[in-house]
Image (tube, rainbow over the protein chains, first blue to last red):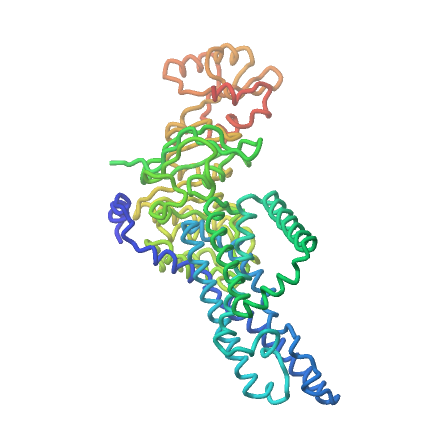
Length: 255
Length: 302
């Protein structure tokens, strides 16, 4: 391209370029190091799976039966979540600052990051829901081990497992990212106000429920909406955080 | 025809009670090389962050390509800015930066980037957080040059660069600028290194604009007069003095403004020695107020 075209291009309005391009390049930016979002979570799950296998072999060797081993209460399937909340934080703390220097807008960066989170959540949800099916089909990897067919999983079929994992995954990523936008916009003061307000809110809620003796009503309500209903609440929270993040990041400044 | 690409008026940035940039007015014309000069903490990076929409002004007006830069995609995609203290994702290596750059800079020249990587000996496969200060600067310079963005900001590009790398930057910038004219804004406190590169100088100190002038004009604008104290004092009595040094009966006074032929001849008759002031010396005089007895910098700024 010659210099003169560069200069003359500067005078034209450029809205013709589709916004989809701007959003998609944020997704590409997040996946330029693919192992952050797609590799390490599976390394963690793989490691925990191996530990679960060894534990199962030991339990069977010691003569503990399938019925009493307690794998149903294993939280192993949730092990990558601690890592992924940090990924959500770093997507904003580091990648955001960097993308601004490359000329991204805050709006397109957030929309692209949200799209990335949706893609990652779909991938995690599809894989875990499928692994629940495999675990059930193989009778716990042929030795009665339980890593995926645990907690609320494996009770209402693939689609429910997919939906619940998707909702949870999205919440974890958006909590990490949106809380970090608060830090970037209002720094430590904003974080303090947010955490203490949240703590106060929880205490008020607990006090209110305790004094009005409504705890049973709350449990009954969750029981009545079931697994799907509960995770719809989780999904709604994820979306709420996504909206909060969108508005907060619009005036956020990199460190 | 030159076009104004940046227009700032009353531009101000405050952080609580601290004023980083105070009511600064300036413009940047298209296809020139600007030096944003000043001491550490003068507000150079803050001005660049304002110009690139990274931070929001507290007061004043700012237009880049005719619009406020923050959140305007059509303005932002025409600029490139790698801050001196730029943070990168932990997992990034220089090769990731070079892979992503063409997605953001539409004039990106891949071949030029590769050549610069060789020239600077940038280790492509090492984590960015493991790079030395000089290598980090080289990465920023490489992206800035190869981006060929219509307006490119270099924030302290010389930081940590060795002599060869400084030379490479200087050479490649001039050569590429000649072939692909564009607007370049360069901030630095190493003034001698870039003095010959700059076409226009914006000097700031403690957040205020001290000087906004054509570099050619600035270069010849100050003179140092040296000789016996009494003679020097009387010769410079009604001139704008920006620096004053005494040693015994001798004095050396730096004045702002050119001397005409008659004045030069008179100085010679009086036995005074006249010497030109380099850009760096001039800026030391203008901003190094505490080094001298009087508040010379403020006199000049007023």
